[in-house]
Amino acid sequence: MLRILIISLISIIFILGIIWLVKTSSKKINEALIKASEKLDFVYSPPESIHKKKITSGIIDGYKCEIIVYIQRHGESSTTYVSFVTYFPESLNMGVKINWRGEFEGDDDHVAKLFIERNEDLVRSQRKKLRRLKITDTYVNSRKILFKKYYNPEEIVKTMHDVVNLAKKIK
Image (cartoon, rainbow, N blue to C red; front, side, top):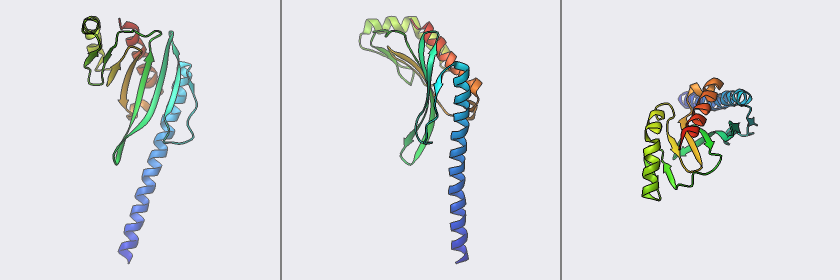
């Protein structure tokens, strides 16, 4: 009987610990996004639920930008990502994209080849700094797993500027 009571107590403490960890983590990223939003002059209003996407958005040098923190579920587990998105002022209208694996894809072989020739070195040089880079006709997106360093508003601001700078250089 005592054994069952102890096991139940340990289980309850474990579950409460996980809940505390999730709430603390959510609070820290909210605080970081609020501070980063102030520095970037973005709009951010924290969601009421810890399970909803956290989105802050604004404009940098004429480029519409978003920082999105979201949870992606994988069966019984999940991963929290932070995505830095910069939209081109006008679509490139090339039907070209660079997928998450860094592979170039396109509708028109000639246009895709031209795009690759002009941007391949640039994209390769940025892939270490901007992980999980995705580029389409309308946006540049760097998606990263939410690590402790992104609880630092300075790191969020720096990464957002890196994505904007890459979008400016794409031809």
